Length: 186
Image 1 (cartoon, helix red, strand yellow):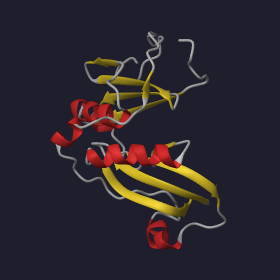
Image 2: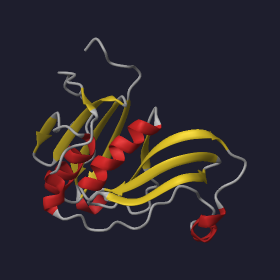
Image 3: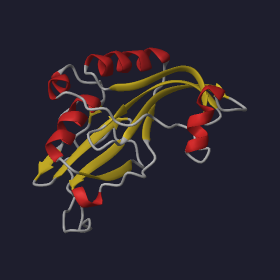
């Protein structure tokens, strides 16, 4: 794989329903999983450079996880991704010109089938404050910023629309000897 950006980030999440997760992420990432096995799926993204795997283990799904996100390069790219996410019925909330995490940003949020929150955002500039419109929400969350609303169900038929345009990169590589708890190897 000559065009890979290293180091690449790897994230592994526990999920309660692998089929629903694969359906969601195939639309959200705009590509099929690079690998699907019993109780396991992996996506290898080229832009952003990320390897993300999902291990079906309902007992280990955590509700206190923060969120994940992608910073895009241009407002045009944000709007393109937002249009696709809207068409698929994935968007939970949109924010334009908000000051969150001490930065002026435009963003939107989606939630996967287990409620994992994803933020897709464009960074305009640093800010010296967080947007007061969300002060009550921040206060309820121990003054944390970047909080999306609770997950809303996305109808299965919405997940068959046009995918978001993340680039697929096939590494052709298999994982090494380390395995996750329960013996599921990536």
